Length: 383
Image (cartoon, rainbow, N blue to C red):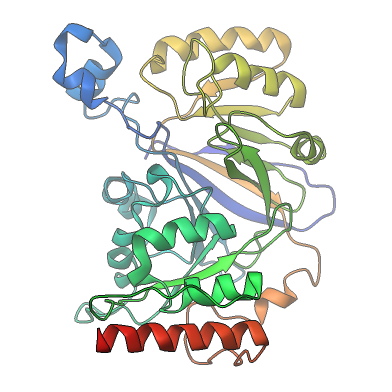
C-alpha cells in the first residue's frame, strides 16, 4: 500500500484509540478496469486502458472495502473489515501481507449486494491463517455484524457458514410464528465460520475493544436501505459507501459527528445514478457537513485519478479538502475511545472462542423454531 497519511487529532481530554483506516477497495460493483471496456476497444476508455496496462495504476479499483486496524493496550492490533465483496481475494493478496494482517477479528456489512458479501466464502481461508499450518478445519467463528435484512441476504448465499438453525430461529424469534417447513433433498453441508450478530439503526456497538461504531441508515436506490457507519465515540471517521439519499434522521446524526474524515459514494462524475450519488450530490453533502477531509469511493471510469484530483483541488477555495481515494490508501487516525463502561455488555461475549454455549432459549417462539427445525430434518430423512 501507499505510505499512510498521518492525521493527529486533538480530542480534548477524552481517551483516544489509535486506528489505521485502509481503503482496500475504492471502485464500484464492477471494479476497474471495466470488463466491457477491455473487451470493447471502440469504447476508447482511456481510464480503463491505463488501469489495464499499468499494474501500479490508481485507477485500478476493487469493490468498496475498508479495513480498520485498532491498536490494543498490549500494542497488538485487531482488524475489522467493512464489506467482503467480489474482489476481496485480490485485496487480501495485495494488501494483507504488507499491512501485517493475518486474519480478521470481525466483519461489518453495509448491505447484502454482491459487491458487499460475495467474498465471505474466502473468509474461511483468511481465518485459517490464524491457525497452525497443519490445521485445515476452521474451529473458530468470526463475528459478522449486519442488519437483520443484510444477514438474511448473506445467509441465502452462504447458509453453510451460518449456524444451521440461523434463519428459522431468527424468524421465529422476530415474528413469534412457526417457521415454514423447507424440504431438503439431502443433509445440508455445514462448515461454519460465521457468528451472525444483528445490529440496529443508530444503536452503537463495539466490534473490537476500543472501537465504537454507530450504524447510519441511508438509501441505496428506491427504498432499499444500506448502512453507513461512523467510527469513534465522536464520529471522527464516517463511511458512506453506497448511498443515493441520506434521510433526515441520519443527517441529524451526521451533523453531530466530529467528521475528521468523510468517505462518501460518487459513482459517476456526470450526475446521480439510481442507487448511487454522483459527484454533484457528494459535493452537496460535503458542503453541508464541512468535514476536515473528504475521500470519494465507488468511482466508475468516468473518474481518472490524476486529472480529477487536480480538478478537485479548486474546492480548497471553499475551505474543502476533497480527493479521490484509491486502493491501498491508508490513514492513521486517533478516534475517541468508548466511554467508560460502554463496552461492558459486549465484553461478556468472546466471539472468537466456542468454549461456552449460549444459554438455551425456551421462549414460545424459540420452541416453535426448534419444532420446525426437527420437522424439516424428518422430512429430509424420510423424503
